[in-house]
Image 1 (cartoon, rainbow, N blue to C red):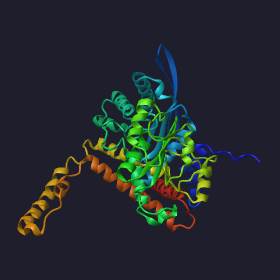
Image 2: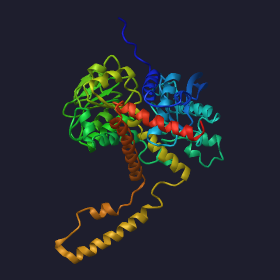
Image 3: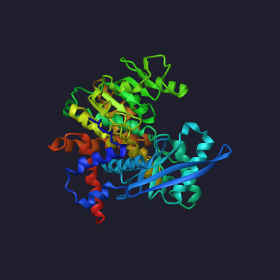
Image 4: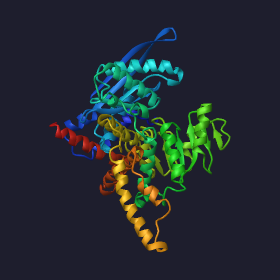
Length: 476
């Protein structure tokens, strides 16, 4: 008997799409239109580095233009290939639809290991890649807006925005050509932490519904729950930090590329992050138990498992041994379609990637709007909001003086109430609202349809229905 073949990431996305559309009544033509990738551009360019020409291969895939611009990150990794980029572009389409960000789905990738190159070399490579995409309108504020992904960050986005400005000197909206930029380069407060913050807000919303928590075989609130995090990059670090510092969770295991740290009493996320920054991995960290085979820690006893790095880490080989009753997919595609089947049969609840890690694109949307409006959030209304609050405080103080010791305001109430919302508060408020609304749209399908038994299928149903509605509105 031959072993069951593990589906590729692309096949996993297609299988999950097929599972959802089988429960819908879409015309076959429209179903196919939503499924397929509209276009993928492959570029091979040379850059003279270290005394010779190095040739790099990059991709930009556009999955769906039912709304424009299309949106999606650019990743730098040796594993980048056309199938992966197209699958990620498809996920971006569904993700944007689910959280009602008005974008189509896109994705980009460059096949290189950023750790092998100096900063000035990476800048030359990034600018040349951006040049190749910009001249084909594959980076453009109104058509295609990239963002950071694995292996890229604020620095690369600033280089791309500057390259676009050099090539489109009269475009007043040039900063909106890319999101995830530094604050002083047209970025927005809260963008760096946005995906990790979104994971936190998603878990908070899940735990607001006792019947959903019970479906995962748990009870109570987030406080005290044990968390295993795989990948302490930008997303995993922020998710783990916020959950441990603000929600009372215990991070009992952190898995990195060189192994894992385990401590049932809870790891100090900030200290581990600092250690990794200095030493390149978790080996040698003085607290907790170190194991060289980090993937084994995915199977540790815990309440919440957060895979926050690569796709396919939970697969046919290890799915049956995963003990966590709740998995939240902070990475894209960390659970393969085969593993998804096994976990669902076990009763594991999976909060799917297209929802769980949508915090990044949500705050990217806010940044894009800020760039187009040329004004930071809160600038016009903040002081007027404070003045209105001052009227109430003045009236309360008048009552306070009149009633004496019988009535008085709580300590710090005046200070907290008087402060108007700045950009960061508004961004967090918008992200929280987005994650709550999107979860409620999923759980409504999950609980009200007999033929839907998991949140991933529910998420696909909600998002595909929205994409279909957009195409119908266009006359397709």
